Length: 430
Image (tube, rainbow, N blue to C red; front, side, top):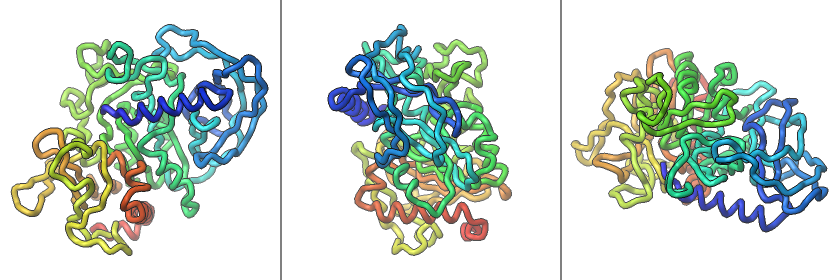
């Protein structure tokens, strides 16, 4: 959905890069790598053949590896660079060093993911598709509002400058410091191969995970059906279907049934809840944006979740009472079929007959009548895994991780992770 803050922050970051150092902008040839993979770095410098030390940094800005290379001025060599990539010449080609799985950057603003090479229990999904969708480097994004001539592009390249995610960078920094867990990281494209996720006990989806391929969704559902668990700390999740180009360098999303040239109706790049796709988001993760809405516009809500199940094990060790408000001012919420006819209570309807489907807390949102935020616990079948879904784009952003109730947000997040990792503790939901 429209996110002006993301574009503003990204534009400011590029301006700072251009004005404060020898690097104007840059990108890598892929989003994610394994240790030992070849990585190509493309940098646009302010001068010609200037010797420079390029650092790989962790998300706290600490250098973990440095390389000496020459930085030179480059120009976009492709037409429609937003679709075909910037076409820079490679500045540096390396074998990915022996780093722990995580999200890293060259400099401060050129991110990439190192996939796990050691055993892990948790996988964190980096929202690479959403970041590409909103980035307007080269002149266009998937959105009219920040595209040249106010006309979006239906195909956007990963081979152009794309910044860090506005809605999950704070979480990524925080979770990397939770050394009690064995954590691996993948990007959205990695979800298309089930081997990348099959060994995890828990999949965490933070921030704003809006753009999903059909393969990724099928693999997510398979993961849950096989008894694995998911913690969704994202809002506006699984809203648009996308496809990739054959070489994986481009993301395709026409956002219109008639404009999309593909013949297979099930692969049309339209909203996932559309009945033409026969693949309800609500059926997969218990909520969707059709029921959800905007949390920062005028509404009758509370800028956070009104708690209706304070006895939940999610709140272990915390002083949470009925109808307390957990503050997290949210850009976009996912919602559920809530019945507000019984005042002052609320009923979570269960149209798919889920084995377990409980409401933890809710907010009211603006978009259409009964737009809401629904924080839910979901178990589709007796043998399937658990899904805890906070339905908020800002749970993992500054508003959540550094906001008014950040200590509680972090404590609840740790409780949810621990519960989903422990088979014994999961029985507490029964």
